[in-house]
Image 1 (cartoon, helix red, strand yellow):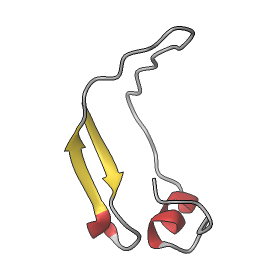
Image 2: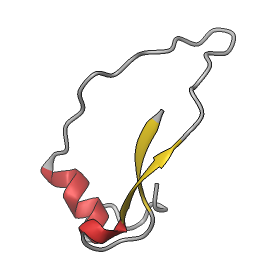
Image 3: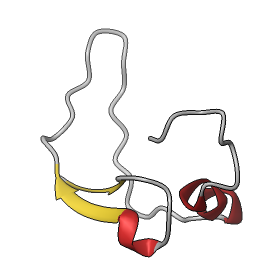
Length: 58
């Protein structure tokens, strides 16, 4: 599967599209397929390092 990951705080250049193995649901878990995802203002603030700075980068 393709995933977009944040490698550091900064501009759009810190986002990288990578390949990840397909997830597998474990016991008591459900696997949900996501067709479309959005980015909101808070997501941009986290990427730029101006919001939720007390949490480690994803």
